[in-house]
Image 1 (cartoon, protein in one colour):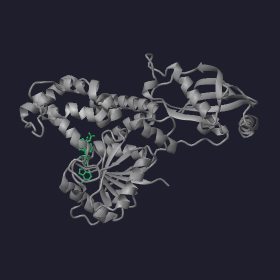
Image 2 (tube, rainbow, N blue to C red):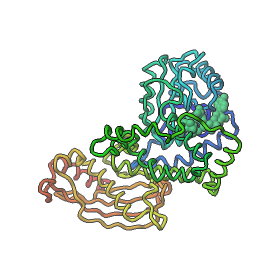
Image 3 (cartoon, protein in one colour):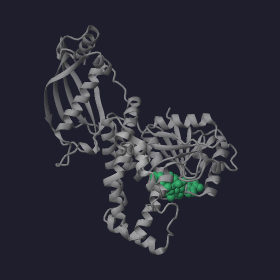
Image 4 (cartoon, rainbow, N blue to C red):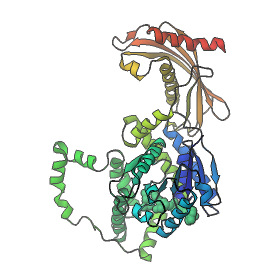
Length: 468
Ligand SMILES: NC(=O)C1=CN([C@@H]2O[C@H](COP(=O)(O)OP(=O)(O)OC[C@H]3O[C@@H](n4cnc5c(N)ncnc54)[C@H](O)[C@@H]3O)[C@@H](O)[C@H]2O)C=CC1
Ligand SMILES: C[N+](C)(C)CC(=O)CC(=O)[O-]
């Protein structure tokens, strides 16, 4: 039976949460009195269905069911997790917590609040120990960080359970040691936002110039190394101490407006809104979301290749999601969505990526016969010596494809596979690949026969075709 998440408040953030849970196999119940909530959530879900699976090289769990409820009680009763994502008003949040706990006193509640502390949220609650902050980042279906903020009244077991749930969804729960207004990340964001407002107000830079300073500069560094590691490197061979000796005194120079906030006068609001329109007004919010999602997918996939930051997290999550298939026909060795960074100037998947998919399919066959990463570390492997690929239909980003593999020859040093790549939704054959691999010693870099157990599994896979 699927686990159940109740999402209370189905706006920008509630919609993102709903998508994150659904695409990880949870059933989701939503309560939001806004008559537009269903349409909005379905739009967010459309974006998420396209983007999130692109991060992975295997299929995510089967999508859960989505139900819109008529009351908070209907949504939360019997749920495994409640994510409160109503508008940022403390009185409203209190009212919602009271209704949730009246309906189901034992359910765990995470709040998406950007700024309130958990002890503020818990004021007047029947079961304060079940409430904590679980602050996400937009879009929740792609951004991994969740700030988990307990108050002293929150049950530590509840925090542990929350961290387990969030990790199972491919998220990165960062436990905040001590509650504080706006948690960790929004403190930064507010400081940057404040300085940006001054720069626009004082006519130093336009909204576009500020965005360029971020996206061509420090934004790229922060996504992979953060702040302190970046500055350590900037200190040269002497590292962080030298960096602080050199730039510490600069903190006293008037580089920053510090805590002063420019007043949001009509004039400033108009100036920013007009500049933002000039910068991005030719694109709809949905266009901008797709552009953002495509860039995030490509960046996180690049970090996957390096095994760093958000990419390392996806690698770890994928290990918990992927299952080596059983030795039976049809042998599905790939089931995945084509990511945006695999397409070329012709607007379809580049031919090199077919090689990637068939190579990944072969690695699954290798894992099935026991020639996995550990085996390679022990000094043996299979090398591909010949492939013949036929490109039969165009493949596009966002399409889900499966590869069915037949082991057509499996004797001695030889392992020959015939892969057929099909579009998942209609079964159209998009490409085939005839691939010959030979068993090798990684010490001598020459071919050799595999050990008996591996050879027996290869023979068994090859025999499947005769049994079909
Ligand atoms: N938008 C953002 O960038 C982020 C927002 N947050 C936090 O997430 C929460 C929600 O923010 P958004 O989704 O941006 O706001 P939003 O305005 O898009 O959505 C809020 C939703 O709550 C619904 N709502 C109002 N009263 C309700 C009730 N009694 N029961 C159920 N639903 C109710 C509204 O109809 C609306 O759909 C806030 O606490 C905010 O601080 C957190 C991270 C980022
Ligand atoms: C602007 N904001 C305070 C609502 C931002 C957040 O809370 C996190 C985010 O997604 O940037």
